[in-house]
Length: 178
Image (cartoon, rainbow, N blue to C red; front, top):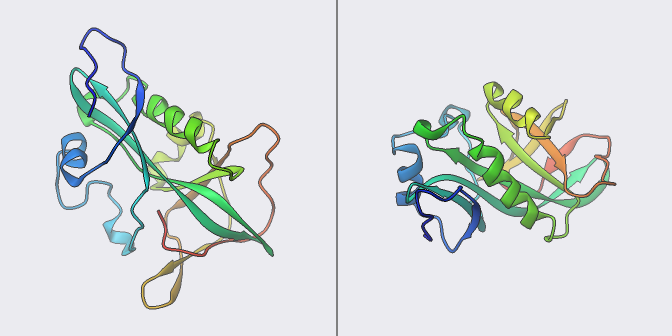
């Protein structure tokens, strides 16, 4: 991981990889670092990774992945955002905003018109301040064994382009969630 000098302002950067060790560096390890194990879901790994280094260590991450979805009867794609993490000891310094801005700048080059994420209800206000909008209604996601389940977490979207309006209708992922 590229390091930033401790006197430099932190910047979001694309990461060549993102491992469990790096996730543990940010979140400190533990059995349920994102607080979502109770949902009982199997998640997709992200394919693109962005991070923020601060005082010589990785302190924030956001991952991206293109996903096939249907909104109502229309099939399309979204950029799934997941694995968003900020180290507990540096929260409140705008690092979530910074790492998401870097990730979403790249997401705008990937083609889809919207980004989508799933989060625990206490995080909805944070993402709302960052420009994300909660979706109402049931969201269906695939799970192993050809199961289709209702997403128990909150689903939020943000436009990737100024003229992108989220269509109406129920949302279904044609994949595991990210």
